[in-house]
Amino acid sequence: MKFQHTVIESLATALPDEVLTSVEIERRLEPLYRRLRLPEGRLELMTGIRERRVWPAGTRPSDASAAAGRAVLAKSGIRAEQVELFIHSAVCRDMLEPATASFAHRKIGLPATAQIFDLSNACLGWLNALTVAAGMIESGQIKCALVCSGENGGPLVEQTLKTLLTAPLDRNGIKPFFANLTIGSGAVAAVVCHESLLPAGTRPHRLHGGVARAATAHSELCQGDTHGVDALAMQTDSEALLVAGIELARETWAAFTAEFGADFQRTICHQVGSTHRRKLYEALGLDLAGDFSTFETLGNTGSVALPATLAGAVEAGAVKDGDRVALLGIGSGLNSLMLSLEW
Image 1 (spheres, rainbow, N blue to C red):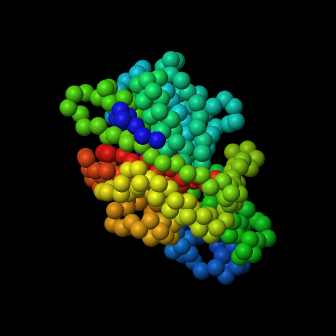
Image 2: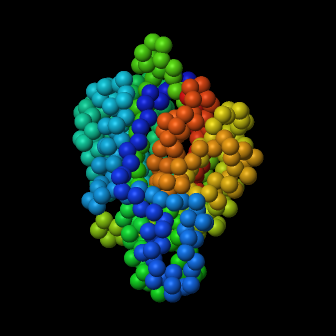
Image 3: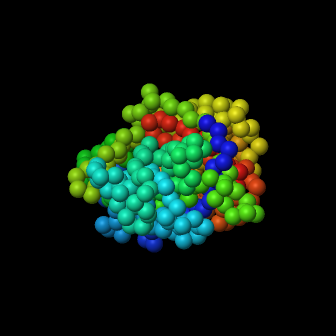
């Protein structure tokens, strides 16, 4: 897929105030650690994640998505009434029906003329939504879209802690639950528009396009679902998922660089943890010096992770005007989407 006229006009995040450290998670799991004789510090040592954020109890994904939507409109030159498409693209949703976009649309204060819907594809949702919006812009259907994602991983972490403390699990039995303890919460939003809406003299943050690949033979390696009222459950074969994900990323990268080259000043991948990042960059032959990461303090925030890291890189000055940035997305399913962006 290639785009000629689509730009990211503004990008913003909304993050919870409450911090949950890996030390605190292990403190709460002390009875399990003692029973299985597990060494303290293993969670941070194995993942590189020191802490993650948690929304207050009762926060809905639409609340998080709307917070990011209001934040990006506050810094945007685009007015809310100009938004013609609104997409909520998180893993987390308020309920099955209606679309979470309906609640977030009202909370943001978007116009009745905007088309709205949810788009879900595990950790790739926000990137997929970006390409859907770009396709509609390029085809002339719309000129402006608001793409939001609000992830609330707190209920998954809490349910996982309860399971680990109450189920009679041995060392092998706890492995499918380990990835859950890396999950964090957050929200991100972007105003995406046709370049003609930018004021004269504004440097466009241009979306060039991307390449997608699927490896659905591995769709059972990571599965999550609801677990009663306001609770979530997920089990992951982390080792197999890592191997299959790296292979899919290698295939996607080959096709991506054939289309867009490999001369990127900055690369940003989905934020899983230190081992995933190291093995991914080794497999793709990339220098870690070109990476920017947030998993150390945010954990894995699902569909929010990659775009929030891009926003953090821009704020930190790690991504500068004119830089070519490769967004290396991968999500359970398995699916990979890599996008080329000129900031």
